[in-house]
Amino acid sequence: MRILLVEDSATDTLLVLNALDRIQGSEVVAVKRLSEALAQLKENSFDVVLTDLGLPDSYGMETLHSLYPHCHDAAVVVMTVDNSPNQGLLALRSGSQDYLDKSHLTNPEAIRRCLVYARERRRHVNEIMALERELEAARKRKSASEESAFWDDLAKDSRLSSTGQTTQIQPSTQLSPRSFEELSKAYADVIERSVEMRFSNNHKEIGPAVSFLAQKLGLAGASPRDVVGIHVRGLRLALDKNENSVRLQLFLEESRFRLVELMGYLAMFYRDHKSADLKS
Image (cartoon, rainbow, N blue to C red; front, side):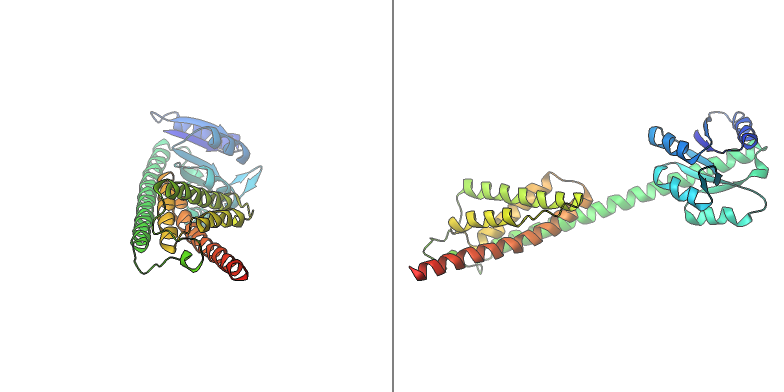
């Protein structure tokens, strides 16, 4: 069992090290400051983090709040003193697996039992969290599959008439396979760029790319059915390259926005061409 001991008191550190030295299979790394603990957690993995709350560079519950995001799968055990009985309970409520009164630092068996139980509790918590992540990912994959099926059915709906018929451009009931695939890939690229902007908080306008794609569709005389078909194919291309559950949800959200935007630009394209035809 690998243990990270975070304690600035030389006396308490020595007591813990002496006790742990008598526990078979234990390996201890001792540090005195929160900053040193964070550096260790960044570079190494531990089974348990045994920490005091009063450190030279951190104090009280703030110590725990700073440690938790960096502990990964490690259990956290807080060392408390007799004159602060509520400290251990507060630590448990905030997410630590156990607390150890410093009056027990001379008792190797009490320390061993505390650390082993804390590690087991953390292992169960990790298993539950992993299961929850798997269930959420499955739910989102199902959502993506159902949405894809919905758009697929919509693309086959005969009620989607050709938009292009309102102009002299000959509407296509079906784009050529090559054009369909090229436009689908371009649409998938637009969705991926849109998602990347969400992840990086880059608010650069994606509209010009959507407008350019709409012009291509308009010149090909694409109908709403064509656009929905390209949406289905482009979304599948994008989803096939991205298994991350968070990204799956973002792709679904962004693809909806981009589809509405694409339809809008295509309608504008046909309206402008109709106006030009009437003037001529």
